[in-house]
Length: 317
Image (cartoon, rainbow, N blue to C red; front, top):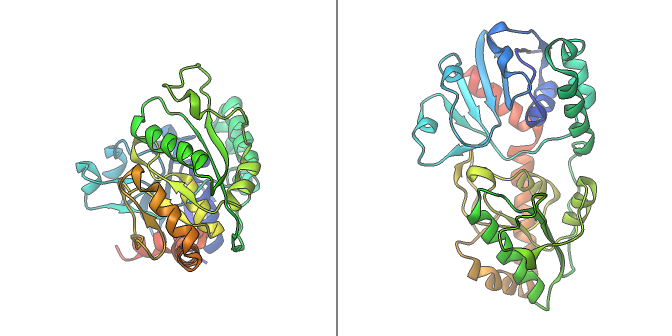
């Protein structure tokens, strides 16, 4: 079996890739002094066939040039379009994914080194987050024949465009009498809700409840997350086989979606009505988008598929 040496202790952002790589290779941890400063960070640094590689799961703000210069390939979750540093030759885009609970695997790989290289507070925080994330499984697609729509989101301080899109979706769903809507914005802890008070929902949903309610939703909304990143929710929605309504991506994906086949793209909030008109009048179209989105996930996005994609790219270099 192929062996991969993990050279740092990444945070939970990399859990999906640790799970995937562990399923198709043998993972061992070998602390590397060069990369100790990347412990508990969103970067997973590893060695395969004597080649260094990094999986950077951070928000799309920049390439870490110091790391880029040392590795054979630099995989990124968020390859932001029209940003020069992401156009460098060794940068490779990944597919949608989401953090999952791998607490047992995390402890198995890193063992006593967790206490050597992480502060107790950091380790406790990571284990707490892992506990709250879902265990990965291939979800069974369910046909949705109701008018229920669920959407819940935070209000972000530095993402006005994202906030505006999400607020408009909340307002539309509440006003369309065809829709049974649940959700809304979660009020900010600092009390500054940026004039979105009417869109606030007093209920907070833990991750398990959020996942359960999303699974019943006739339509789910995907739009850019922090700094233009793809939301973790996208991969979860695809895994569940849901109808994904999306604004155009600001990042490059390893394989693009096909509008009208495995996703439904819109450009303006004024298009919400036309989307729901189609969804309610054409069950077959709703079924096609849902089923093909699920096929996209199973072909490209499972942990195993992504691990094989990464290994293949490194092997070919």
